[in-house]
Length: 294
Image 1: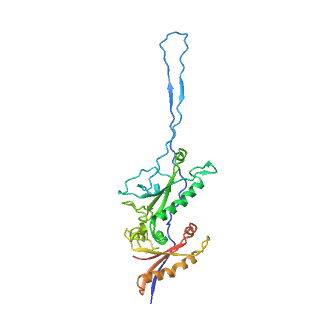
Image 2 (image 1 turned 90 degrees about the vertical axis):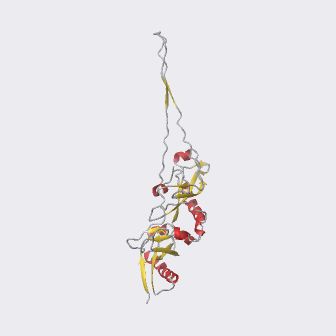
């Protein structure tokens, strides 16, 4: 008799939220040059000298230099999910948390008129370009990309920097370690990192306990874990969420069969089927995760 331990429960967040626009303003300094006059003439009928002041034109902020396409940065999660960044790069051989994989040029002209950097048009450009560049950089199959702990974040100039002429945007790769903690990296990741054998053994999606249990936390597979996401299972459907009952049933049997076959068809085995939530479905996730004990 086959005994199957089934876990059923909605997944936690996987996709980085796109933060609300937050612009760091640079201060503009102004100074007044006060000119005073004096005279040694004691003639009482001579008019007193007047004091005049002439303003110095406001300083125009210099745009920051264009970022390097292979630079590394040591950022916190809060810094990595901000829309702008003034952090200085660090050597990629030292510990870092983000790696720039693409630097592009903003499309900031509409019918000859310049649009602001936080406009919907420009934000859509970043949200379309950076994920595409990210997938191209990772390599591997779409399933391998879904099973990895890699994500992409992006940065643009501030309003003041954009006004001063900065027209670039930057796409950075990050990897998550435990939960929502960024995984420290010790070297520059190569293009096609997921094409390399054993890449998911380091950067894959694993769990600290049985999925759905109180002790379960998502971790990169390079960290201690007892469960591993062994595959993704696509779910058919349109824009409207099919409902929990349908998405739960859509991959349950397929996941069980996959885990059972990979384990050599034992009489007893455990697996976990994790289906997308309504929010994840709305964000475009049309697959669930199949879990097995590590």
